[in-house]
Length: 241
Image (cartoon, rainbow, N blue to C red):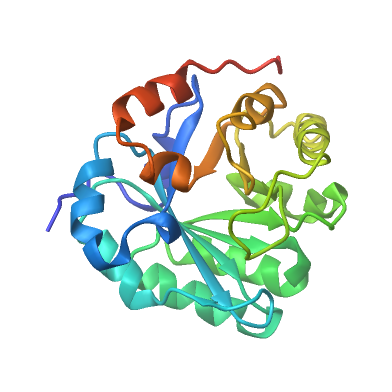
């Protein structure tokens, strides 16, 4: 078992804010050799990203609380669980995944009031909370959540399908979201994340548009020289001031 110095909000608060974060999607790991992959990425990952899908809100099923519990025993890094689930189960799923070891739970703005209740529950249970937007949802949908979250994640592709190209709308949406955070006086307290369409040619564009973390899949797990890849990631500068 790996010792963890911080958990929940404390773990998220310690994330660096002076460079682009490396958020590694375990959906792209070698699930048959998870322990090996976790050991390989541990020196480089800022936080682990675990997608959860109920086959209704998004195509297919993805990951269960026991998977999160397994990861939590094997890493000292924070765990971010992205709940792609329907509103009627989002609160119970929030509870289950926090009990399994999630430090940060992100729910979809499309869950509406149930999503807000799930965020309140996450905070009550000692975890941090975030909100996610589908590509087709107006960016303004984050407004009711801004005062209650530490992460805002914008999907840059259709939800729940790997290997898609980044939407041409993705960068403009990040810029709009950053403007809303600034207007609300929360820009310095919320990390803006980009998820989907993450490629070598798109990450610099997302960073320039204001992304503070990108959810890395094959760009990380498929790179034989992970040290160089992460050095490249950390060297990317934002044009947002």
